[in-house]
Image: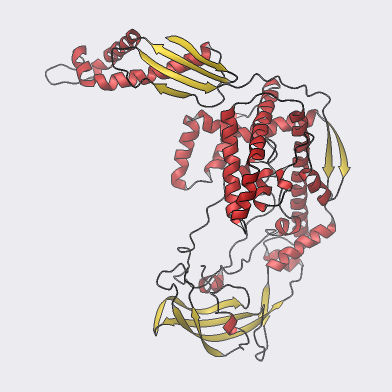
Length: 546
């Protein structure tokens, strides 16, 4: 094989490879000789079919196979002979005018990884900001849970239902005098003012009493999921079984047991642990920021633009998605567009820091074990539907780039932990607000994080300025959030008219972290909460989702 270098500019390389026709022919003849004994043809004994007939029958297939194998081997030889470390998959183009019996030519373009000298990690100094969890915070978290576990008691028969009261109703709906599917229920709970049912339904039940019967008229919204009900006027005959009023939740052992715990002390212990885990995550993010700023300030080498492009595309896609969810999506996107160059700089910084951390890890023998990799694969596979998991596993096994992408966040964290162990760390106790302010502050390079600016869409992604500031959950590398169900199909028992799902019941610490701590900036997407179990009984049956 002849290798001719056609480009050597910075990190970009290009080569033209020529594979002699004689080499291809020799390999084809060897393959024909290999398969000939297995070929069956009328008039010939098994294994006695002449090579020229085998080639006539299977020549095109064998030729294509040999060319493909030769190309792959030629690329591998190029990388080895030229000592190339490709940053991403090389771009390969095959001479379209190639014909059998001629030399094969292919062009290879790639970017190589820069030669990075691993920085000296001795003498590294970091400050750890710690936040003690107070009894008041635990109490607040408990109150947040209690507020989500509302219970109701029967009100006197003379009580008129008002805002926040619960009514238990039987109803039958009809359109043009005909009952429609899903428009009937018995013992359905409804909280006045909750917005659980379609507009106009709850408002007309304000003031009803236990035992009262009433007929109301409502219009289904034009964008209602059920096609047969969109924009239709409907009448509902309603009987009020009971008016109930909210009763105060007592934070005691019985309350804790209703959440599936042994007692109130166990609930406090659980909440304290979750809050500590959350603040520890913030502390780790703050230390990571310091570490990465230290690394970034001392290194400024060229990085492969293909890697920067890929990193920027990931950031940009996320920004666009978040801007689309903003209250004012057009303005949010304009604000993001105005700082497009800043985000590209962020992408370049992340790539540079990633290369530095990789070099440090290799120099110091940091590795992801086979067992750790298997656990990563198993965890990632669980995010797919059962029928897709096998294909995912096959992808990871067959595509080194896919496996490397899955491995990268864990490897990066292991390098960071290695550097934490080597660093001289001093501790300072601060409030949570001071810790969050430190995370959002300017880094040592003098770059102001776009996260500090106004649009909500930017805050989440731009905070990922550093190559490893946040764990992979927000990047979608590890997984991934379950897709939201289609509201049009997400009904229960065929009853389509209710707007929201009935309140959940079991929530052992589910809401505590979210309510007491604000946004989780640690990057750990699931540090606090176990998801509450849905309410059972008739509430779910009678209050279908939108």
